Length: 629
Image (tube, rainbow, N blue to C red; front, side):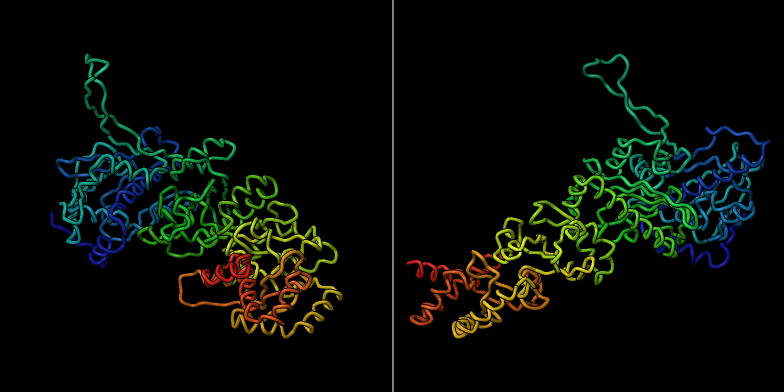
């Protein structure tokens, strides 16, 4: 029989299929299994619509066989099969979809799942095969036909004997090359892995003869000899756990699925099993891990959920389904509504994906808020592991999601001695309190000893302790919470000084203006000014800042790997009621050189209390020892 050429640009499209469209060659098995499942769906649908057709559920299956000697891989299904005309139409014209036509001809709704609708997945077989043979017999027909092609040069169709209804595809694999080992697709373990990865939830059994071993009869039971034998095994689990009702599943089943699927040795902290129906339908099974994966805070970490279309894995990590701040969430989404491109590896349109992502974002936030309200202990464990990305989420993208995330935040409270929310803080604010006060430092213990906290504590006001570098940046973006502005205890103006305090500071400034000017000149551009203060109680000095850039933000920004260094407007504040004032006055009058050393030591002490580095430790040590001696 003369070979027929492919129709309508098919030769060029086939070339693209083999070399460009698919990213991974292993995808061919997913596509052929999906097509087989599609054919089984069609036969199953016809059996339901015609009461004269009887069927046995066990007759619906897919079978895979590998022959290493012949270098062939065979995929057989008991689906609806194809006539000669259908072989001509579906395989002779690339990109014609038999599945799409079937749905149209039978007026099927979107509720009927037919996986293949683009008609090109079959041709992915040519990525690994030199020759493809398709033998098929249509349901209701006594005749069989064989379609044979060796690639873009064309194909042949001929009558053949076939005892059973369905389709058999035989791939003759390409020879191995230096870059590609096509033999891998004949390996039992490799085939099993590909089915488990991509087609585990195809609803029909995918079977294969597998090699097993058993002790030989009559051998020593303590040191038995083993023999190999063949046994047919179902490779896929068929029923996805996420398609079951929540009432059917136990927590142990969820935990076991999570640990097996995502290779974690700990149970998840939270399981979110959700679905949506209507304009957009999907099912999602999400997990919040008990702790971050080892690479979570590295550049190598990739966020994303597994994306399935009707139980077939399309993407292993679909990053677009999660915002970065929820990147710790693991799980999967399965939807029949996704518009896939011809390789199924990318979405043709992102409208559906964006809708699903928006739903999941709200659902995750809702579940976390519920955990915060009803299971505080578990939420605090979660926040210890994943609070940092939530804080970055408030700050990221110019604070686009700050209002969405703010009520999930926790900060250590100076008065409660535990983690609190901003809403809890505001609910305890005193009637005369204008600001939400916070302090920054490396640890709760270090912040608690900062001299700048003394006046705020003395007034009986609560302070939030910020111990992470992102905290203050996020708060600066937030600006207000329930109309209350945030105020750092290190700000130059805390809004707490009464008339008497202001009068005391003004009087000290006038009396000691020459002293403060000398100290400022001694420190040079290290500080913007030196001035008296009444905010301190037991400490002699502190550093405060003017403007939006705080000393803590300066420290964070300058630790980043770039050459741009920033500097906050620092003020050195001197406690006017501390004995150090008398010493400074005496030195200003009697020994200005010694006063310079005192000034440097006081400034460096203030830096150390802030957790900032001393510029010249050797000089600081020498001056301190000299003053002590």
